[in-house]
Image (cartoon, rainbow, N blue to C red; front, side, top):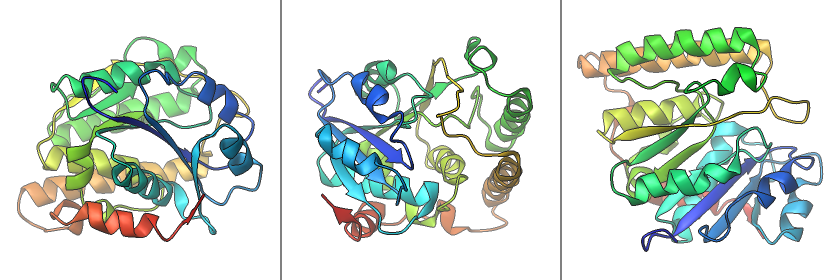
Length: 263
């Protein structure tokens, strides 16, 4: 716990057997109350390794996609009583040692959302981020900051912390089950007026770390632009997308999570 708040780390996993142990060993278990892994129908030993480590493990019988995986993670964390939820990829690309710092920023009451940015400092290129991804990241972030009226260093990190209130408010069921889910969540947090903070984070690109290919990156980039434009048109009251409509998110996402095989 931090300042009396229960902290959960959620691990959306797909074929993470080679990196899960390294990731788990660096999670600060002295302040983390719960670790939850959702195995999105992996084809390796991810779920078996998770169980051997004592991680609360949820297994999807069929692959639900990156966004679908996170929906289950967040629903489970809420159901198990988390006040602060840190989403960490189990591929060891991000440093688990920052969990305490990110959770503390939310526990302090200063922020509702905290992003671990690879762009603040020199972590991205130094950690091996491909140059085309770095350039795309900076370009998309520039456009999004204009359309969303924000000043974030990046929108594309896979390392995030959320307060319970945020996860209970956002209509996550309206978000995609694909990679653009992350981006849509940030557009939603802006729409509903939550405060977002950032912390500098080193990153590691290596063979075992998960990364989408160029084709999928292009699809993701187009989805990001669509999300930002949808936000702007909604602000101008030209459209009323479900993405920004208040709903009983907690109940609906927990119902979705209970459809998974829980072990």
